[in-house]
Length: 407
Ligand code: HGY
Ligand code: MN
Ligand code: MN
Image (cartoon, rainbow, N blue to C red):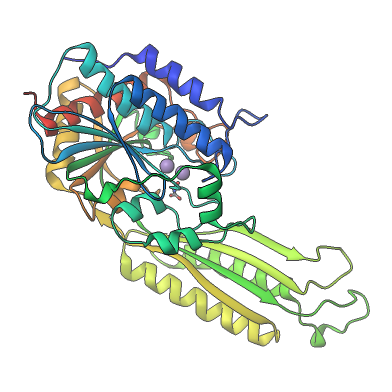
């Protein structure tokens, strides 16, 4: 059976990890930053070396297509190369680089597939600078307009469209017009399940739903020592009360995950009652009804806490992404590839959101997971063992071959 060139893949992963490298061994390639552009250029250069036909759309998504013996819908493989603000080196990048490695292996072995094969790298999967996350794949799936995407305001106060223009990442092609037969995404699990069981491959059947919310609070700054407790309009207190309630949602709703990823108070001095506060909340659940229950309880509590303290509340829903069931045939292709290669494997749900979750709306999709050491991710210590990187890339190669068929 064909196997990828593991040494080449590991070298590419190391090379890409130098782009946006942080002192602590992590990476930062926030969407539409110079580092993100450099990461995208790195991928584009490899696509050109492979002679792929390159398409870049108005939001900066890039696809490199390898001809098949026949024209028609292509099998897409890929992921993203943007990162969270303090990331590891495998999240997203493994899926894009393993896809390029799989295509290069076809070239090395002189294999022609019946269907074309496309390698795709979606922009702004993480949504750390510009919400919502999975923005690039959401755009390709025609679920967000270019106008709304370009208008997104960054956590740094910038506007996405300005940064897109400054970095020159946009193109004039239309990825929505490219016919897709199936999409397979290789990704690190980012959780403890595979490692805990000693299983090599996760055959991902579904992804839980996600909704992000931002609350800004406007109170009144005043003297911490003199102001009586019952006359305060303490924006910081309300933010902390909401954050505490978020944890309770995670403890009282079945299979609910609930996180306050960002919380800030102003002016931020010990003896000044905060007059401004901001918090961003990440809620997840595999069941859409429960996710909606969490959303409603969160908003209801925030409104009650703010009015009790006579503090102004502004709420913005930054995203709502439905739970998704992947396509049984594509899941089957992943599972039979793992089987044929002799890797241990198990079916599972994804706790993290992924581009495949959005692509599933426009093409039969599925995912491949490989173990995360210690279940750690979104952290410079994120690590996947070399043999598991290799296994995941081999499964991606063979799942793609099943779906694209040898000519
Ligand atoms: O947030 C997520 O689940 C993914 O890392 N974008
Ligand atoms: Mn991520
Ligand atoms: Mn990711």
